[in-house]
Length: 215
Image (cartoon, rainbow, N blue to C red):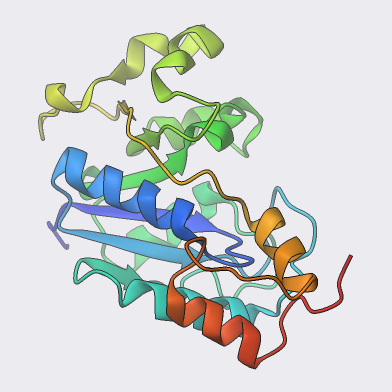
């Protein structure tokens, strides 16, 4: 089994933006992860149907991954026709030879606030580490008050130890105040996406007329 300390950041990525990449970088730096896999979902479980096709979203993620040598793209959720629940993805990773004690599921604090509504949440949290990064208006340390039932599992990155039981690491780092919703609205209006998505992603959106004229 692979022993590389790795992060997994899943999402709809409709489109991927600088906030996603800031979250990936913050987790990578805080826990010295060797790789971070960006995992686009073909069928996202907690969102409305994506506006861009799975192929377009995967292509944009691949372009964004070129921004750092430690970023990777995983297609593990791109072949399923059913919603990509994280607990099911862990089963696929184990079947592919990944040791869960090396795996760190990365998410923003805004998304993690709803973790108890995720499929098999208790099982999920007991199987691997989570790395939760602050998002604008959602500081990661505040989750101790938001989710008191999980507070005992929450740790600061400096407390990291490979021997720890699955834990929730709270990373308080600045991340870009941008959302995919905002980007789609700007793209629909033909406005510039400079500074919101990687330049290669902005060019891809423009070249393929993604989100153009969509309300």
